[in-house]
Amino acid sequence: MVERNYEIEDMSKVAELFGSFDFNIKLVEHELNVQIINRGSVIKIMGSEENVNAAYEAIGAMMSVLKNNEPLTEQGIRYCIAMAREGSASGIVSLNGDFICITSKGKPIKAKTLGQKEYIKAIKENPICFGIGPAGTGKTFLAVAMAVEAFRKKEVSRIILTRPAVEAGEKLGFLPGDLQMKVDPYLRPLYDAMYEMMGVEAYQKYQERGQIEVAPLAYMRGRTLDDAFIILDEAQNTTPEQMKMFLTRIGFGSRVIVTGDITQIDLPDGKTSGLKEAMKVLRNIEGIAFCALSEKDVVRHPLVQKIITSYEKYEREKAAKAAERRKNEKN
Image 1 (cartoon, rainbow, N blue to C red):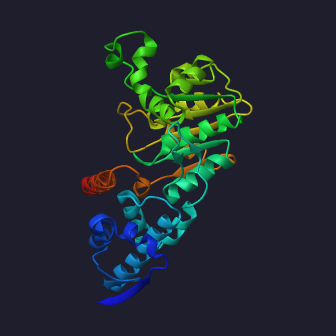
Image 2: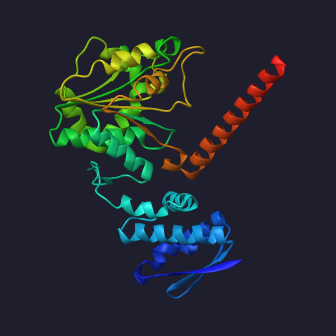
Image 3: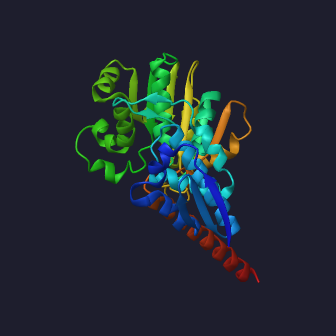
Protein backbone atom coordinates (compact mmCIF):
# COMPACT_ATOMS: atom_id res chain seq x y z
CA MET A 1 0.00 0.00 0.00
CA VAL A 2 1.24 3.48 -0.88
CA GLU A 3 0.18 6.95 0.22
CA ARG A 4 0.00 10.22 -1.68
CA ASN A 5 -1.12 13.64 -0.50
CA TYR A 6 -3.16 16.09 -2.55
CA GLU A 7 -2.71 19.71 -1.43
CA ILE A 8 -5.88 21.81 -1.65
CA GLU A 9 -5.03 25.34 -2.77
CA ASP A 10 -8.52 26.83 -2.60
CA MET A 11 -10.21 25.84 0.66
CA SER A 12 -13.46 27.51 -0.44
CA LYS A 13 -14.00 24.61 -2.85
CA VAL A 14 -13.60 21.81 -0.28
CA ALA A 15 -17.31 21.40 0.48
CA GLU A 16 -18.15 21.19 -3.23
CA LEU A 17 -15.27 18.80 -3.84
CA PHE A 18 -16.46 16.35 -1.19
CA GLY A 19 -20.15 16.83 -1.93
CA SER A 20 -23.17 16.23 0.24
CA PHE A 21 -22.35 13.56 2.86
CA ASP A 22 -18.96 13.16 1.14
CA PHE A 23 -20.71 11.57 -1.86
CA ASN A 24 -18.13 12.75 -4.42
CA ILE A 25 -15.09 11.46 -2.56
CA LYS A 26 -16.83 8.21 -1.65
CA LEU A 27 -17.51 7.69 -5.35
CA VAL A 28 -13.79 8.10 -6.10
CA GLU A 29 -12.96 5.68 -3.28
CA HIS A 30 -15.43 3.09 -4.55
CA GLU A 31 -14.53 3.32 -8.24
CA LEU A 32 -10.75 3.29 -7.70
CA ASN A 33 -10.61 1.08 -4.60
CA VAL A 34 -8.68 3.57 -2.47
CA GLN A 35 -9.07 5.10 0.99
CA ILE A 36 -9.26 8.89 1.21
CA ILE A 37 -8.83 10.90 4.43
CA ASN A 38 -9.13 14.67 4.71
CA ARG A 39 -6.71 16.52 7.02
CA GLY A 40 -7.44 20.22 6.63
CA SER A 41 -5.89 21.34 3.36
CA VAL A 42 -4.40 17.89 2.69
CA ILE A 43 -6.22 14.91 1.19
CA LYS A 44 -4.44 11.64 1.96
CA ILE A 45 -4.97 8.87 -0.59
CA MET A 46 -4.06 5.25 0.25
CA GLY A 47 -4.16 2.07 -1.83
CA SER A 48 -2.23 0.39 -4.63
CA GLU A 49 0.19 2.67 -6.48
CA GLU A 50 -1.79 2.59 -9.73
CA ASN A 51 -5.11 3.35 -8.05
CA VAL A 52 -3.66 6.05 -5.80
CA ASN A 53 -2.15 7.87 -8.77
CA ALA A 54 -5.44 7.62 -10.66
CA ALA A 55 -7.37 8.99 -7.64
CA TYR A 56 -4.88 11.85 -7.31
CA GLU A 57 -5.38 12.79 -10.97
CA ALA A 58 -9.15 12.42 -10.69
CA ILE A 59 -9.32 14.77 -7.70
CA GLY A 60 -7.13 17.26 -9.56
CA ALA A 61 -9.51 17.12 -12.53
CA MET A 62 -12.50 17.60 -10.23
CA MET A 63 -10.85 20.68 -8.73
CA SER A 64 -10.25 22.13 -12.18
CA VAL A 65 -13.98 21.80 -12.89
CA LEU A 66 -14.82 23.63 -9.65
CA LYS A 67 -12.26 26.37 -10.33
CA ASN A 68 -14.14 27.13 -13.52
CA ASN A 69 -17.31 27.57 -11.43
CA GLU A 70 -18.89 24.53 -13.06
CA PRO A 71 -21.12 22.19 -11.01
CA LEU A 72 -19.55 18.86 -10.09
CA THR A 73 -22.12 16.29 -11.22
CA GLU A 74 -21.98 12.53 -10.77
CA GLN A 75 -21.51 12.12 -14.52
CA GLY A 76 -18.67 14.65 -14.41
CA ILE A 77 -16.97 12.85 -11.54
CA ARG A 78 -17.21 9.51 -13.32
CA TYR A 79 -15.71 11.10 -16.42
CA CYS A 80 -12.81 12.51 -14.37
CA ILE A 81 -12.22 9.02 -12.96
CA ALA A 82 -12.35 7.41 -16.42
CA MET A 83 -9.87 9.92 -17.81
CA ALA A 84 -7.61 9.47 -14.79
CA ARG A 85 -7.52 5.73 -15.40
CA GLU A 86 -6.28 6.44 -18.93
CA GLY A 87 -3.80 9.07 -17.79
CA SER A 88 -5.71 11.80 -19.64
CA ALA A 89 -7.23 13.69 -16.72
CA SER A 90 -5.07 16.76 -17.33
CA GLY A 91 -6.91 17.30 -20.62
CA ILE A 92 -10.14 18.06 -18.74
CA VAL A 93 -8.77 21.53 -18.01
CA SER A 94 -9.14 22.29 -21.73
CA LEU A 95 -12.91 21.83 -21.43
CA ASN A 96 -13.09 25.09 -19.50
CA GLY A 97 -13.35 27.01 -22.74
CA ASP A 98 -16.04 28.89 -24.61
CA PHE A 99 -19.58 27.63 -24.85
CA ILE A 100 -21.34 26.98 -28.16
CA CYS A 101 -24.55 28.86 -27.58
CA ILE A 102 -27.15 29.83 -24.99
CA THR A 103 -30.47 27.95 -24.80
CA SER A 104 -33.84 29.65 -24.63
CA LYS A 105 -33.67 29.29 -20.82
CA GLY A 106 -30.24 30.92 -20.58
CA LYS A 107 -28.25 27.70 -20.14
CA PRO A 108 -24.82 27.69 -21.83
CA ILE A 109 -24.12 24.68 -24.04
CA LYS A 110 -20.51 23.47 -24.11
CA ALA A 111 -18.47 20.31 -24.53
CA LYS A 112 -18.56 18.08 -21.43
CA THR A 113 -15.98 15.55 -22.59
CA LEU A 114 -12.79 15.59 -24.63
CA GLY A 115 -14.53 13.56 -27.34
CA GLN A 116 -17.27 16.18 -27.59
CA LYS A 117 -14.64 18.91 -27.80
CA GLU A 118 -13.00 17.18 -30.77
CA TYR A 119 -16.44 16.74 -32.34
CA ILE A 120 -17.18 20.48 -32.08
CA LYS A 121 -13.75 21.33 -33.45
CA ALA A 122 -14.31 19.02 -36.43
CA ILE A 123 -17.66 20.67 -37.16
CA LYS A 124 -16.09 24.13 -37.12
CA GLU A 125 -13.21 23.18 -39.40
CA ASN A 126 -14.96 21.06 -42.04
CA PRO A 127 -17.90 21.63 -44.42
CA ILE A 128 -19.05 18.05 -43.79
CA CYS A 129 -18.65 16.26 -40.46
CA PHE A 130 -19.75 12.76 -39.45
CA GLY A 131 -20.42 12.29 -35.73
CA ILE A 132 -20.49 8.56 -34.96
CA GLY A 133 -21.05 7.09 -31.53
CA PRO A 134 -23.45 5.41 -29.09
CA ALA A 135 -26.62 6.85 -27.59
CA GLY A 136 -26.23 9.67 -25.10
CA THR A 137 -22.98 11.12 -26.42
CA GLY A 138 -24.59 14.40 -27.50
CA LYS A 139 -24.18 13.86 -31.25
CA THR A 140 -27.52 15.36 -32.25
CA PHE A 141 -27.82 17.87 -29.42
CA LEU A 142 -24.43 19.46 -30.09
CA ALA A 143 -25.08 19.42 -33.85
CA VAL A 144 -28.32 21.36 -33.32
CA ALA A 145 -26.52 23.77 -30.98
CA MET A 146 -23.90 24.46 -33.67
CA ALA A 147 -26.64 24.95 -36.27
CA VAL A 148 -28.56 27.42 -34.09
CA GLU A 149 -25.41 29.41 -33.33
CA ALA A 150 -24.49 29.61 -37.04
CA PHE A 151 -28.05 30.73 -37.79
CA ARG A 152 -27.97 33.41 -35.07
CA LYS A 153 -24.66 34.73 -36.41
CA LYS A 154 -26.16 34.78 -39.92
CA GLU A 155 -23.49 32.42 -41.20
CA VAL A 156 -26.35 30.49 -42.84
CA SER A 157 -29.86 31.61 -43.78
CA ARG A 158 -31.69 28.45 -42.78
CA ILE A 159 -31.49 25.20 -40.81
CA ILE A 160 -32.59 21.88 -42.25
CA LEU A 161 -32.96 18.85 -39.98
CA THR A 162 -33.73 15.43 -41.42
CA ARG A 163 -33.68 11.75 -40.54
CA PRO A 164 -34.87 8.56 -42.25
CA ALA A 165 -38.28 7.17 -41.24
CA VAL A 166 -37.14 3.56 -41.24
CA GLU A 167 -40.45 2.03 -40.18
CA ALA A 168 -42.22 3.77 -43.09
CA GLY A 169 -44.16 0.65 -44.05
CA GLU A 170 -46.99 -0.85 -42.02
CA LYS A 171 -46.35 0.95 -38.72
CA LEU A 172 -46.42 4.40 -40.30
CA GLY A 173 -49.69 3.64 -42.08
CA PHE A 174 -51.47 2.98 -38.81
CA LEU A 175 -50.71 6.48 -37.49
CA PRO A 176 -53.47 9.09 -37.92
CA GLY A 177 -53.33 12.21 -40.10
CA ASP A 178 -51.53 13.26 -43.26
CA LEU A 179 -47.97 12.30 -44.21
CA GLN A 180 -46.39 15.08 -42.12
CA MET A 181 -48.33 13.96 -39.05
CA LYS A 182 -47.31 10.37 -39.69
CA VAL A 183 -43.58 11.15 -39.82
CA ASP A 184 -43.58 13.64 -36.93
CA PRO A 185 -43.03 10.93 -34.27
CA TYR A 186 -39.79 9.93 -36.00
CA LEU A 187 -38.63 13.56 -36.05
CA ARG A 188 -39.55 14.27 -32.41
CA PRO A 189 -35.93 14.20 -31.07
CA LEU A 190 -35.03 16.94 -33.56
CA TYR A 191 -38.05 19.03 -32.52
CA ASP A 192 -37.13 18.63 -28.86
CA ALA A 193 -33.56 19.81 -29.44
CA MET A 194 -34.73 22.84 -31.41
CA TYR A 195 -37.31 23.74 -28.75
CA GLU A 196 -34.64 23.70 -26.06
CA MET A 197 -32.22 25.81 -28.09
CA MET A 198 -34.65 28.42 -29.43
CA GLY A 199 -37.89 28.11 -27.51
CA VAL A 200 -41.17 26.96 -29.03
CA GLU A 201 -42.37 30.39 -30.16
CA ALA A 202 -39.11 31.37 -31.87
CA TYR A 203 -38.90 27.96 -33.53
CA GLN A 204 -42.46 28.20 -34.87
CA LYS A 205 -41.81 31.73 -36.15
CA TYR A 206 -38.74 30.69 -38.12
CA GLN A 207 -40.45 27.53 -39.35
CA GLU A 208 -43.37 29.55 -40.75
CA ARG A 209 -40.87 31.75 -42.60
CA GLY A 210 -39.22 28.68 -44.09
CA GLN A 211 -35.93 29.37 -42.29
CA ILE A 212 -36.13 26.15 -40.27
CA GLU A 213 -37.25 22.87 -41.79
CA VAL A 214 -37.64 19.49 -40.11
CA ALA A 215 -38.48 16.79 -42.63
CA PRO A 216 -37.95 13.10 -43.41
CA LEU A 217 -35.03 12.23 -45.64
CA ALA A 218 -37.30 11.39 -48.58
CA TYR A 219 -38.18 15.10 -48.85
CA MET A 220 -34.56 15.93 -49.77
CA ARG A 221 -34.57 14.20 -53.17
CA GLY A 222 -34.19 16.52 -56.16
CA ARG A 223 -33.29 19.61 -54.12
CA THR A 224 -30.17 21.78 -53.97
CA LEU A 225 -29.59 23.15 -50.49
CA ASP A 226 -27.66 26.44 -50.59
CA ASP A 227 -26.64 28.63 -47.62
CA ALA A 228 -27.99 26.12 -45.09
CA PHE A 229 -26.88 24.21 -42.02
CA ILE A 230 -28.06 20.65 -42.65
CA ILE A 231 -28.19 17.84 -40.10
CA LEU A 232 -28.89 14.22 -41.01
CA ASP A 233 -29.73 12.31 -37.83
CA GLU A 234 -29.88 8.51 -37.34
CA ALA A 235 -27.82 8.09 -40.50
CA GLN A 236 -27.09 4.45 -39.71
CA ASN A 237 -30.62 3.76 -40.99
CA THR A 238 -30.00 5.19 -44.46
CA THR A 239 -29.28 2.97 -47.43
CA PRO A 240 -26.16 3.67 -49.52
CA GLU A 241 -28.42 5.19 -52.18
CA GLN A 242 -30.08 7.50 -49.66
CA MET A 243 -26.73 8.61 -48.23
CA LYS A 244 -25.36 9.41 -51.69
CA MET A 245 -28.58 11.27 -52.55
CA PHE A 246 -28.36 13.33 -49.35
CA LEU A 247 -24.69 14.26 -49.63
CA THR A 248 -25.14 15.38 -53.24
CA ARG A 249 -27.88 17.87 -52.21
CA ILE A 250 -25.29 20.20 -50.69
CA GLY A 251 -25.06 23.63 -52.33
CA PHE A 252 -22.83 26.69 -51.93
CA GLY A 253 -22.39 28.12 -48.45
CA SER A 254 -23.83 25.05 -46.75
CA ARG A 255 -22.49 22.97 -43.89
CA VAL A 256 -23.48 19.40 -43.08
CA ILE A 257 -23.42 17.21 -39.99
CA VAL A 258 -24.27 13.51 -40.27
CA THR A 259 -24.87 11.67 -36.99
CA GLY A 260 -25.41 8.00 -36.32
CA ASP A 261 -24.73 4.93 -34.21
CA ILE A 262 -23.56 1.93 -36.22
CA THR A 263 -24.49 -0.41 -33.34
CA GLN A 264 -28.20 0.48 -33.68
CA ILE A 265 -29.01 -0.23 -37.33
CA ASP A 266 -32.73 -0.86 -37.86
CA LEU A 267 -32.56 -1.69 -41.55
CA PRO A 268 -33.93 -5.06 -42.73
CA ASP A 269 -31.47 -7.95 -42.66
CA GLY A 270 -29.18 -7.94 -45.66
CA LYS A 271 -29.45 -4.18 -46.20
CA THR A 272 -26.16 -2.26 -46.06
CA SER A 273 -26.07 0.87 -43.91
CA GLY A 274 -25.32 4.02 -45.89
CA LEU A 275 -23.38 5.36 -42.93
CA LYS A 276 -21.08 2.34 -42.74
CA GLU A 277 -20.44 2.53 -46.48
CA ALA A 278 -19.77 6.29 -46.34
CA MET A 279 -17.16 5.69 -43.62
CA LYS A 280 -15.24 3.56 -46.12
CA VAL A 281 -15.85 5.55 -49.31
CA LEU A 282 -15.30 9.09 -47.99
CA ARG A 283 -12.64 8.50 -45.34
CA ASN A 284 -9.76 10.22 -47.15
CA ILE A 285 -11.56 13.18 -48.75
CA GLU A 286 -10.32 16.58 -47.61
CA GLY A 287 -13.07 18.68 -46.05
CA ILE A 288 -14.94 15.65 -44.70
CA ALA A 289 -14.24 14.78 -41.06
CA PHE A 290 -15.16 11.63 -39.17
CA CYS A 291 -15.40 12.04 -35.40
CA ALA A 292 -15.80 8.93 -33.25
CA LEU A 293 -17.44 9.24 -29.84
CA SER A 294 -17.38 6.40 -27.30
CA GLU A 295 -19.12 5.28 -24.13
CA LYS A 296 -16.79 7.63 -22.19
CA ASP A 297 -18.56 10.56 -23.87
CA VAL A 298 -22.02 9.51 -22.68
CA VAL A 299 -23.61 12.35 -20.73
CA ARG A 300 -26.79 10.58 -19.68
CA HIS A 301 -27.43 8.41 -16.62
CA PRO A 302 -24.29 6.48 -15.52
CA LEU A 303 -26.10 3.20 -16.25
CA VAL A 304 -26.15 4.10 -19.96
CA GLN A 305 -22.35 3.74 -20.08
CA LYS A 306 -22.55 0.33 -18.42
CA ILE A 307 -25.32 -0.80 -20.78
CA ILE A 308 -23.31 0.24 -23.85
CA THR A 309 -20.14 -1.44 -22.53
CA SER A 310 -22.03 -4.66 -21.73
CA TYR A 311 -23.58 -4.81 -25.19
CA GLU A 312 -20.22 -4.20 -26.85
CA LYS A 313 -18.68 -7.02 -24.79
CA TYR A 314 -21.57 -9.32 -25.69
CA GLU A 315 -21.24 -8.54 -29.42
CA ARG A 316 -17.47 -9.17 -29.33
CA GLU A 317 -17.97 -12.52 -27.59
CA LYS A 318 -20.73 -13.51 -30.02
CA ALA A 319 -18.53 -12.60 -33.00
CA ALA A 320 -15.63 -14.58 -31.53
CA LYS A 321 -17.84 -17.65 -31.00
CA ALA A 322 -19.19 -17.38 -34.54
CA ALA A 323 -15.66 -17.18 -35.94
CA GLU A 324 -14.60 -20.19 -33.87
CA ARG A 325 -17.65 -22.14 -35.04
CA ARG A 326 -16.88 -21.39 -38.69
CA LYS A 327 -13.29 -22.45 -38.14
CA ASN A 328 -14.34 -25.76 -36.64
CA GLU A 329 -16.82 -26.39 -39.47
CA LYS A 330 -14.04 -25.94 -42.05
CA ASN A 331 -11.84 -28.42 -40.18
